[in-house]
Image 1 (cartoon, rainbow, N blue to C red):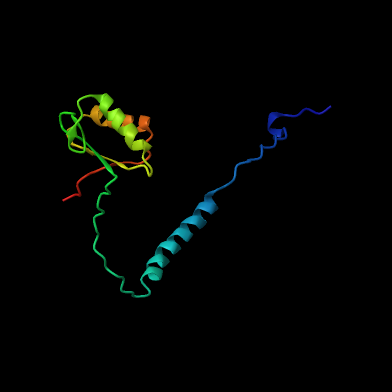
Image 2 (tube, helix red, strand yellow):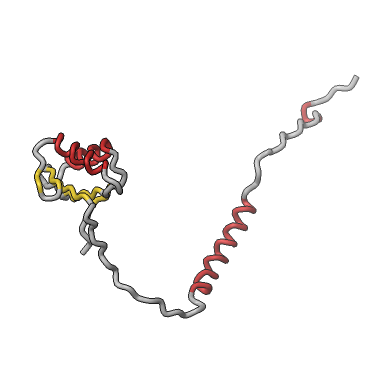
Length: 141
């Protein structure tokens, strides 16, 4: 009978590593990225072309577009007429939603207006079923 000492014991096999080594993949992708970054400007500027120049034209509001204005105090206007009650806004929205083709709703809200006032207009449009809503802004200086 033989005696085995701990330093003579056979070592257990280490478990296999099942994860993928992504380092070579990352290296290849970085090299490809650098190649593409270098070649793209050459491809874009290789042929000189005079492109037509057109001024930006402001699109005129269509006659059927609805403009609702919210001033700084939260008063809601249907075009230029102040609406005294929220029920008037809901009835006007319902009439507009019934038209074919359905008009667009353009909301002009003062920058100092409360979000609640603008939210009431958007909620009324949603309840009436108006599909297209836009906010009118001023272009930057």
